[in-house]
Image 1: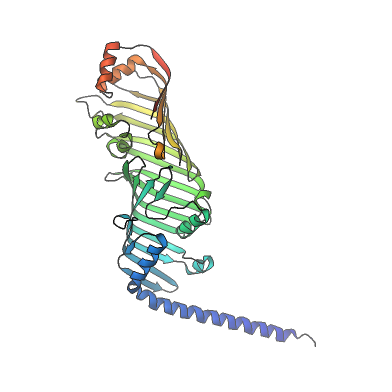
Image 2: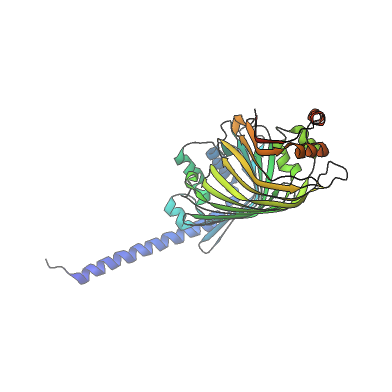
Length: 399
């Protein structure tokens, strides 16, 4: 039987036309059903809350759900939502005015919800440090399995646009120290495996004092694959807030004596993100003056400047190196010095060290006596000994 090309083309064309028509009808039916269902979304709120609660293993509650559908773009809005701790009594994550636009095509391709745009008015969450120095968001199931990690974060990182008007991060160290960080106008943008995060930072209850920019590359949903660079500019610091909460573990008397010290400064810090759990830092920091509020009519430290490097390794340690640090105070001559401060993490938080390359004993004795920063017993000893000369390679450990 001879091959009839014309009939074959007609047959193929008819089948393609039939398939296209069937697809369009299916899409039209799905869109019509979706528009009808999304308008009644709030009636299904108990089922939505139950599904999310069972998925996360913690009680989840949402406020009114509002849905709309324009052309082929559905959108969902949740007025308020809360995720509670394991006991179900304290919220560990709260958000207001969540607005979500799913990407229907990408969701079908990935077989899970992928959003085109996700924005939140205010988001409060809590980061907690575990005994082994690891960090997780309270309320979400902890897991060490890479596949589970991809599943937990896949939907979040698969979107192309994520914004938060106001983000409050409550930080709980294993030592019991608690502090908070605020971020405003946070924006995460994604293109393929490239991510850019920008935000304005500040201490909770304080003014905005820093600008952050991070650029990373990594596989969607696999946090361990992310590597990148970051840049932070800082314009002021308040010692009485977040910093004092951390230092108070080791030096409670010093923190109480210093009180509220806020100063304008200029800092530029660059970050090398080798992985989410291994971050290196380098930069410069300076301040025209640092007031000594705890001393009546005392002159401030002036012309402070230093090069700074540091590291943060999850499950291991963090630390800061002050290099060529220098400042002036009254008529006292302070030689530039190098200082390294380090602290271990998790249940070893009480272990740390301070190292100085050299100390001019006479200058630092005068500084200690005039600023009253050291304990009274030490001041009495210094007054009696009146030490002179230099000490080099000083290393002190804490445990």
